[in-house]
Length: 277
Ligand SMILES: O=C(O)CCC(=O)C(=O)O
View 1 (spheres, rainbow, N blue to C red):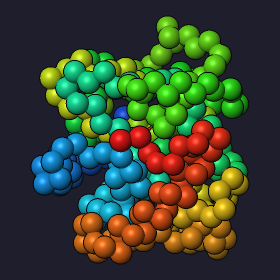
View 2: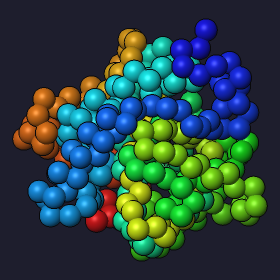
View 3: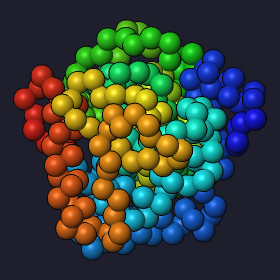
C-alpha cells in the first residue's frame, strides 16, 4: 500500500519520470520556513549565496525539519522504499526579473552516485508559475543518460551551466506550476530546466535529493548523507552533521569540509574549486 501517492501516481512517476503537485507543506509551515530564510538573508545582507545554498540542511535547523517532513518522506517512501537518506539540498532562487535560468539537463550527470534510483522533491517556497520561471519537464526522458556540454553561462544557475547536447523538443515541455507549499517529484535522469523570472516576486524553491540507503558515491573519495527514514544497514555514506542551532560553529566547519569534497566531484575536470557566488 503506498503511503501518500496512489498506485496510479507511482506508476505515472515510473513511466513519465515525475509527479506533481503534492500538497506537502501547510500554508503556515511554508510561511514560517520562508520567513526564516528571509530573516537570515536580511541579517547577512542579501540573498543566500555560494555554498550556503547547498547542503543547507546541515546549517539551518528549519531546513533539517523540511527534509524530514512526514508528507515528503511518505511520497519518497512510495518511490524509493523504506530506507531513505537525504543526500543533498539546494536552493534555486530567482529574484524578480532575474535573468537566471536553468538549462535542460539531467541531474545525474555529475553527481557521482552509482545508481539512478534517486528522486528530488522540489518544494515551492513561493508560487512557481510560467511567469516566475517554474521548472519544465519532458515526460519519459529518464530512461538513459545523454551527453551534456558545459557552457558556464553567467546566468545559468547550474554548477557548470551544463546543458543536454541532443535536441530537446520544447513543444513537449510540461510546466510545473506550484503553489507555495506544494512540491514536485522528479527522477534524477529526467530532462528538466527553467526559464528566467519575469514576475515582480521572488521564485524560491528548495530541491531535496533523496536516495535509498544502498546507493554509493562512485566518484568521490567519501560522501555524507542524513538518514531520514528507516535503517541504514549499508553505511556507504558518512553521517551528516545534524544542527541543533542555526549556523552553529560545528555545523559551519562540517559544511565547509563536505562542500569542498562535493565541489571536487561536481566540478571535476574544470579546475574550479568553489561553488559559483
Ligand atoms: O529550480 C529550478 O529552476 C531548477 C531545479 C533543478 O534543476 C533541480 O531541482 O534539479
